[in-house]
Image (cartoon, rainbow over all chains, first blue to last red; front, top):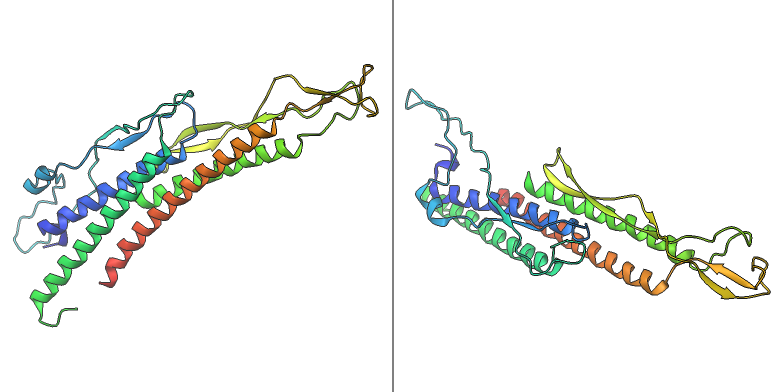
Length: 136
Length: 136
């Protein structure tokens, strides 16, 4: 069993890769804030229900023919769907990036990422408590 | 590695803004440069340009500073008959640089640069938090 097989950790892992993919898109928006004709982009929100039902997990591991085999995980960060940035203004050059809104999104992404890493650490420490009494 | 990508994209934005700043500095420095002779033209204002390009290696849209284009508007002229490069009527041709416009442009470049620095900082914090999970 690998760590990605644990549902809670897997959901958190996907959440974190979604957030870092979003951060990458936001940084592209900010870098191109003065490029004429550049349209801002964002990621579609993660579907929490899908994530819980496991259908958001598109990572089939290698098939095993014996229960003692270790499944090689091919868990790649799945491609996340993009959508238009939805910033309020388009300026005269056709650029639709609003730096203020992007900065808000960046701060939001950062906070959510922090939440995800904290929950991850907490989950690990709870597991450790279950394994032996001398938790951290 | 999305977070590293987003840091590199933010760096490309910073590079483009500093190149823009260099063009603005040239304009401001030459705001009062006259031509060497009465017949030739004085310094002509340069307009910084930005283009976005898709970086296949990063799989992201980065920004690049394009070649500055020349501003083709008319030169300023000032009545100064004592000047050695004045024409027959006593007028001296001065560059078509408006310092007010340049200062505003400079502020904009500064703001965009700061936005990129903030994104870089946010991405770095997220990356560090992920690495910190190893300590837990």
